[in-house]
Every structure is written in structure tokens, then in C-alpha cells.
Image 1 (cartoon, rainbow, N blue to C red):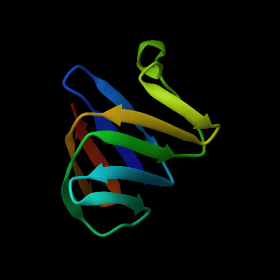
Image 2: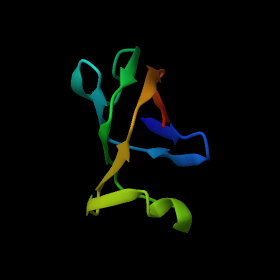
Image 3: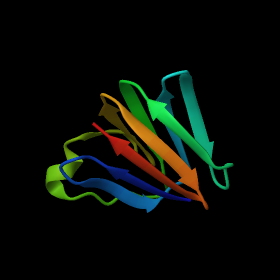
Length: 93
């Protein structure tokens, strides 16, 4: 599936991922390939991204924390997510 993470300043990430875990206001949840359509709000916490590979711009890479070669996290204050047609769009603050 395709994941796109956008902040008011810039696009933080766009690429093919295997899963994304998110801090929902009603509890954390994970989205996998071909998940049912969903719209949800997010609270402060970490977005955990699993992908076969990552490519970041230098200035944006500092916002992410590397867990291992295939997993990174991004700390957020709040946001919203939409999953539709195997594409996840996350708007974050």
C-alpha cells in the first residue's frame, strides 16, 4: 500500500509500506495492505512505519527515528488519517 504523511510545512514521507501503526484517539491501531476504508483522528504519539526500504530528504530524515532497516517512527502531536483504495494519507501536526 502507499503511505503519504503530510505536515503543514511539507510532505514528510511518500512510499510503499507493508504496515503503519497509529495512535488513534480511541486507542492505537494498525493498517495493513488492502485494509477497509477508514477515517480517524490521531492523538499525540508515534507513527510506526514498516517498509522494505526508506528514502528521505536530509532535512526531513531528522524527524524520523530508525528502529531497524525496515522500521521507522515519527512523533506527532495530533492528526487525521484516511485509508481508501489501498492508499493511506496522514495529515499531522
